[in-house]
Length: 341
Ligand code: TYM
Image (tube, rainbow, N blue to C red):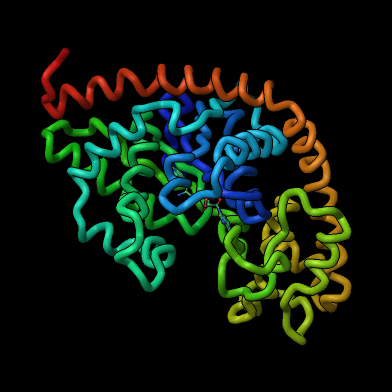
């Protein structure tokens, strides 16, 4: 890790919303990093259902969607004996600390959050208070465990900056220097910003109405090949240097996806394909994606077919997460100065 902290001092936390199928952006920006980190650090990976209800959810779907993310975590290679996998709403520390942080964070800080503006759309008045306070809950998720590192995609950068501001303000406000750490985002790498296959200027997203814009984690090999074939590029072929990708959003996105999946740098991808047309590159990319994603899709189906095992793993996760956060929340209560029962 960048700051050279030893394993003993680091704690990794990240969250994923149970709001539909995961896509290649979630995998390269988050899950793949989770899998790598679990071998060296204490890790907590949380399914953030309290965040999901900041916008209306389909009736009766939340529990199934939660299991689906648990299955995706396991299928991607997260080992429940190494990392804690759990559901946010089952550990009350998140909601409790979020309230305390609601009283530390400033309206102005939240008004600057671009994701709220995007999600609330034109009619801000009708957005839930929860959607506005969403990043405060995110700060509580991280800091209820005094997590030091947070692997996320680039779209979470602003929320992570807010978490750092809240930690710092709380420490100052309550005269508790260094009580909360400054959590460090782990964003770098070619997978941090995977864009839509149809428009290289917007991120790949679950909410894009066009299924052709994204590779879903359970797409068939035929679908994957078709989507890459139709992906937006430009008339020029694969260039020789990363500078030549500037302003070529679709092309840069495909090179980035290849680099993320193959775990090599963008320059190494260019070295391999420079001068080739997209007619050569796209099938190679599809083959690589199929080779990497098919085993995960198969595991995913296996876990999905065993909800009792998923529930067992999540229950163990709840206990482990609660045991870590309980003493931290007890200290927070002391610091704030609440009456003690
Ligand atoms: P969510 O559920 O939208 O996305 C889960 C993770 O996937 C990453 N991601 C992407 N990465 C690269 N390219 C993309 N196109 C792309 N789309 C999504 C996200 O950055 C994220 O890492 N607010 C968070 C969930 C959250 C959280 C937390 C994260 C709640 N509490 C505490 C970290 C720590 C979110 O909505 O992620």
